[in-house]
Image (cartoon, rainbow, N blue to C red; front, side, top):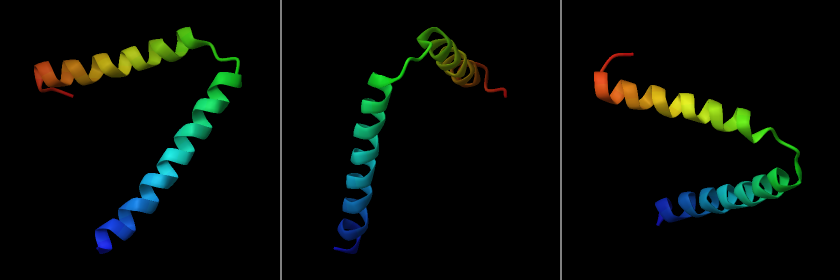
Amino acid sequence: MIRFVITLPLVVVTWVLLVKLVKDLKRANIDWTGVTTIIGFIALAFWLRHITGMG
């Protein structure tokens, strides 16, 4: 029961923040090319770490 009491508010707060973030992102003028490039480099770093075991 205590896990439920702790987990439920965390889920609700996370959901509210996610909805607010999506609303803000829809209204913002963002350079998506730069954002996707950064995400791509991070994904590449994790993939290379997984493949080589270094880093």
